[in-house]
Amino acid sequence: MASRRVRLDGRTGEGGGQLVRVAVGLAALTGTPLRIDNVRGNRQGKRGGAQHVACISFLADATQAEVTGCSIGSKSFEFKAKLSPKDLVNRNIKVKAESVSSILLILQAVLPFLLFAGDDRGSPISITIQGGTNVSFSLSFEYLDQVLLPALERFGIKVERKLEFRGWSHGPIQIGSAKFGITPLRPGQKIKEPSWPKERGSITKIDISIIIPKYLQDPLKKALLFEIGLVFEDVEANFVVVDDSRHQARIYTLLVAHTSTGLRFGRDWLYDEKIKNKSADDLSTEIAQKVVDELDVEVRKGGLVDEYLQDQLIVFQALAEGSSVIPGSFEAISSKGEHVDRTDEPFGDGSTHTTTARWVVSQLLPQVKWKDKGRVCEGAGWTASRTDDPTTLEDALKEVQIA
Image (cartoon, rainbow, N blue to C red; front, side):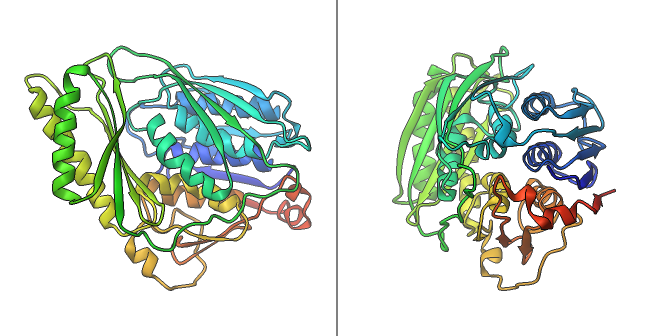
């Protein structure tokens, strides 16, 4: 296990919870002792936190880690793993958050660790996560299923998924559950260099998912098809999920644009405005105009990944072998610079979640190189045996501290 220490200050990274999830997941994977101060230091209010406790608790148990400060509201904590992924014994895992925490965000934190928990027999891992599938400020199960996991297949990562029942943060609190099947890499294997297209291509179709009250289904279908027809002329639109949310406060819509080069761009909205005194037609028009306009803005950026997906892929780019280029805008695609980026603070193209993820990854995987404002990632080519590499032992003499 690595003995170099990483210390992070939550006020430095604007990504908030993103910093915690990425850092703890990689600390468990690499065995790097970690301390984070000013946890969620830039976050106003007390929103969230339970998903962080849930994933940290699982990783602490799996690695028999020494942990302090693992509680909702804690301003700092430390994590020091004693076991590595290859020591994982339990392959039928259950993770239960204390509230309607995002299942996707919990999976995001633990997936890298589980991917490297393979054995010579190729034994699969099953993980059931209880929490929220449609939660404020978090990606949904539908986005996970239709955008994120298909993208990970380009890295050679395949995750089976099954929605057992939905969990909502809107309306009466309802805990959901999703089950995932993971085939970890065998000892010595690496995450492969992603086969990512170099061009976005044209929009060929748009998939629509709506989980809404029954009274709203027909009006929203009509409004979405009308708005899509105006903005994405001659593009085929298909309803792939139409479910009854069973409560008027639970209104969720996802659009996924597919391109001729095989890329997917998602945009969604878990409705968070007042619905009082709004007719079904007015509400449907409001929803349709917002999600279609936002998808149009996303596509017009000219990048090869949408804003939400970009930050989710940073960890896998860093762990994979080879070089990957997954820019989020046309400006980033067209840039030809090859200078090596400074990694002492959040950097590069993309949202604050993306720039924070790059920064955190760079502290825990210093062998990764980023170039041209994050446009190019030269991955670590991580394997289970890398902690025995002499370079890592040399790094153990150093301490990284971000204050």
